[in-house]
Image 1 (cartoon, rainbow, N blue to C red):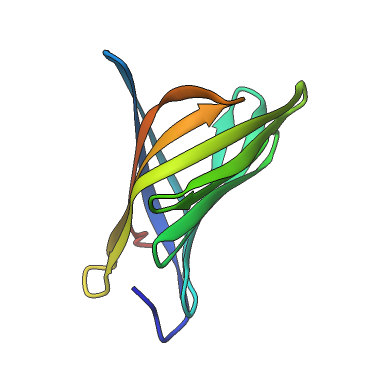
Image 2 (image 1 turned 90 degrees about the horizontal axis):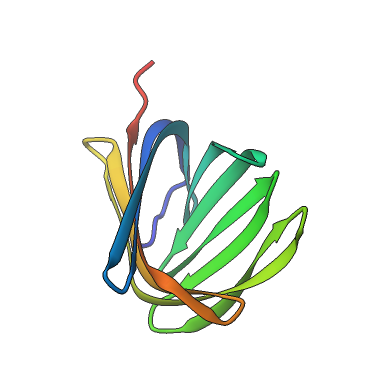
Length: 147
């Protein structure tokens, strides 16, 4: 979905990550506030996360059939996504850098202009240092924050 106009709005964000590895499944949820930014051919969702290592600013970028998650702060991460492609990213901590790989089977974004809400849906296999870490389903829903 390409956009002809730029825009920005404060949003309430729900991030739900489900990780499957064999028979094991874990789900993590985060509710936070941030901003939704729309540019000509991409959308960005920006929010802060409190992690064990400290505060981290997360930026999710989605364009047609591809995207990325960037984290900056106490940890640095670059995780790229492109449908049906195997890509390499990285995860930096004070203890060192790990190579991360993604193979994305689904990447989808929608935004309902009249309801001022949307979602980002990414399904991918993750490898860390070359070893399979699981199948990740990232579902981010967001809606305009009413002030």
